[in-house]
Length: 175
Ligand code: S3P
Image (cartoon, rainbow, N blue to C red; front, top):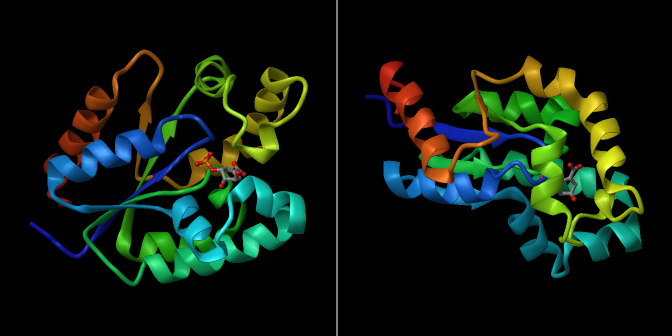
C-alpha cells in the first residue's frame, strides 16, 4: 500500500465534496482539508465578502496559492472549491501527489442542495437553477477531463459515495 498520496475531490458547488471528504477521511484515517476554509482562515473573512470586496480574479490567485501549499502534505483528503478546474496550474499541482475524484451531480441535485444557501457568491443570483445549468455546461469538459475516478452522486448517501471511493482506492492499491 502506498501512503504518500492525497485524495482530491472535485466537482460543482453543492455536490457534497466537504461532507464526503469528512466521512472519507475518517474512514481511511487521512486528515481532511477544505481549500475554501483554508482560504477563509488566511483572509479572515468569508469567501462571499472577499468576492464582494476584491472580485473573482483575486480569489483565483489566492486559490492557486492555497493549493500549492496544500499539496506539500500527503495522506489528506482535499475538498476543493468548485472552480478549481478553471486553472490548469491547480490541476497540475493536485495531480502530483493526488488521485482526483470527481463527484458528478445533476443540476437538479445541486439546486436542491444549495437553494437555501447564500454563501456562494456565484450562485447569489435571481435564477439559481439556470445559472447552475450555464456554469455546469461551461465547466463540464474540465470536470470530466481530469479525474482518475468519477462517482455519480445523485440519489446516493454520503456513506455510499465514500464507500465507492474506498473500493476504487483499494482495488487499485492506491491508499
Ligand atoms: C466556487 C465554488 C466555491 C468557492 C467559490 C467559487 C466556484 O466552493 O470556492 O465560491 O467557482 O465554483 P464550493 O464548491 O465548495 O462551494
